[in-house]
Length: 213
Picture 1 (spheres, rainbow, N blue to C red):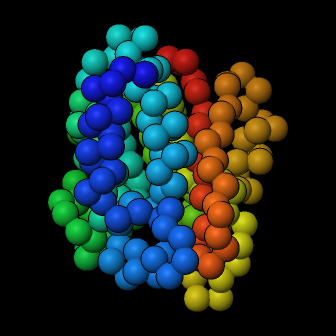
Picture 2 (tube, helix red, strand yellow):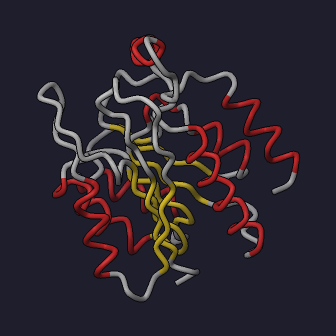
C-alpha cells in the first residue's frame, strides 16, 4: 500500500475517537462518540477497497452508506478514495450533513437515491443502519442490485445481546450470504479485541465482491 494512503489514513484516524480503547477509556469514547470501528480492521478494509478501485481504474467511486454514524467515516471515503459520497440516516440529530434523511427502505428514499445516481451504479455499498436481520436483509435486497462492485456489512461478528439496545443480527445475514452467494467472492475483516468491557466489542466487516457485475 502506498505511503500517501497510509499517511492520510493515520491523519484522519488520529483526529477521531474510536472504539479500540482499553480499560475505562472505552466508556469515555462511548460518551464522546466517534468512529465505531476497530482501527486495524477498518484500515485493512479500506486498503482492500482502495486497491480494488485502483486496479480497476475506478477513479471517482460512488459510495452509498446506510447509517452514517455522525459522518465520521465520510472523511475516509472522500479523502482516501476520492469518492462521491451519499449518506442515508433516519436520525435527524446525527452530527454533520445528512444527504438523505429517512428510512432507507422508504419508497421516497429509494427514489431519491436513484435520482442522485442518474442511471449510474454504486461502487461501494456500506450497510450500517438497521441491524435487525429483516432490516439489513431488505437493505441488501434493495440496494444490492444497484451496486456494481462491493457490498459491505458491518457488525458481522457481533452476536452479543444487550437489553438496552435493539438486537444486532447482521451476523445472521452474513452467514446466509456465505452459503447463498456462490458466484461472488466473500471476505471478512475482523480484529479481535483485548477487552470485553464494551458489549459492542466484536464488530467485523463482511465484504461481498461482485467484480463489476
